[in-house]
Image (cartoon, rainbow, N blue to C red; front, top):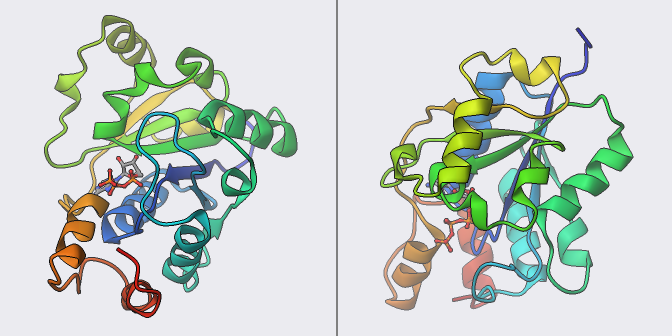
Length: 215
Ligand code: ATP
């Protein structure tokens, strides 16, 4: 068994980053003994409307949110590219940099995994990384409607956290995390309504939002 510790990857729009993202990263890292979690803010998202805030602001908010956690690393590769950034391409680039043996764990909420079959080259992603699916309020895994995704999930699922260190890619593992029903959409709604968004994100992120008149 290779003694390479698995590295976590958390992609997102982070518009803005909030405690839901941070607990997701921390709890999955703890549950699976990940050596680090890379936060990768997306450029132009292929599956959804353009983010409200610029890439520069979203990156700055992630930097502030994670700066006191030695386990967390900011990776700006997607916002530095022009055009859409597909997770497949990002993982292929990481794989090329880190080598064939390095276990990679793509972290996502259950809401993201239920739509995973709509991602660019989703089947090929299983050859590049494991997937850790965290339970999030309102998005049970039972809601997988796509037969091909359901089949892939059933074939690849494991309950054994060790499995993500034993192979570089290919498993799907469910990780129960503290349910925090926080979303960036709801936070933007609060701020647009001039209501407080305190205690939903790190104070430094909220200060940055206020200072830069975001949302
Ligand atoms: P929006 O409300 O704009 O859709 P979001 O809050 O869902 O944003 P994203 O940047 O789209 O945030 O999410 C990135 C990843 O983090 C996704 O995999 C998503 O499932 C996960 N995630 C976001 N919020 C939570 C949360 N509260 N609990 C668990 N996972 C979360």
